Length: 366
Ligand SMILES: *Cc1c(COP(=O)(O)O)cnc(C)c1O
Image (cartoon, rainbow, N blue to C red; front, top):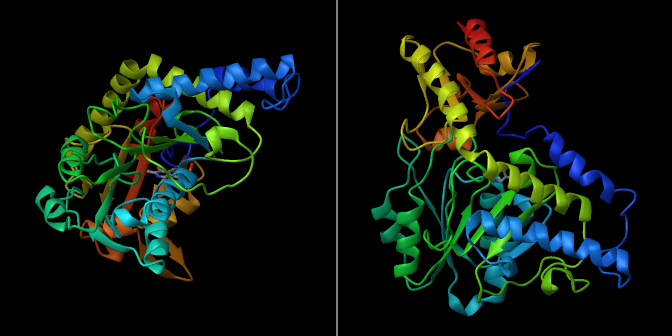
């Protein structure tokens, strides 16, 4: 099986797995205990926190470990509006966000928060003028993702950050797909809150972090012990935290090489697609990640291919429930019909993807 579905999850890196192992058995202690062994664990956890903060040019105290991007998103949005209700009851987001953002916004609507869902153009990008116009006196937050998980399309994060800052609005950015691919400096980009998940960068599942800029207060989702500076109760998940730190360290170490690798794979795909009149790439061709490519193949049934292929693990642009095709909300926001969504395949690479895999895939679909 050739795995081309890395945007949904990645295989754990062996060095990451090895770094985690001792913390499951020999070093199983509770990091909050006071004995000597626990102190070592505390140091390891703080080392991982430092690796996370270095990655985005933040301070270690600004990093809160969570169970992944979904929890971080819930915490950032619900936690902010519950804690800061006097700062405004309006949030601006976008129709192509991950469901974790969209569903949390829907929940906030039931609690009296107004939500503006910005449109995107056919390339998957929001209009900055529309964003500016959507801001009112009640706007407290803008929630826009860095890179889209279905198309790889990037938003203009620096411009969005500036608009947020100039209007005194907090900027939450879901950077789950961008982390490990694009260098991120939260200060330069004026990002106030940011999330990621380790399993998208060859780390373990069930761990990630939320960056919360100094001075911002959030109501905790999980009340309990004093862990994470009273922000999130619950015994420290030492093995996963160590794994997260290691995955981040590795992603930074090989950032340039990996990006060259992705660009190489992308170019190969791109040239081949350009030579075919029935296939095109969905979304912006320059403002993008090169490890996620969504292609539309005319007269192709993507759900049949995805579900029946014995050779390839890829993802499709639609879900088929009881023979009704429901296109992805991302592709539909970009103007595709349900039927067109079912002609779309998402191919996503990681460090393990080889050019031979791409060649074999292209042979198979042509
Ligand atoms: C995967 C993903 C998430 C959710 O991450 P979990 O670790 O599964 O909670 C959120 N946003 C984006 C952009 C993602 O790609």
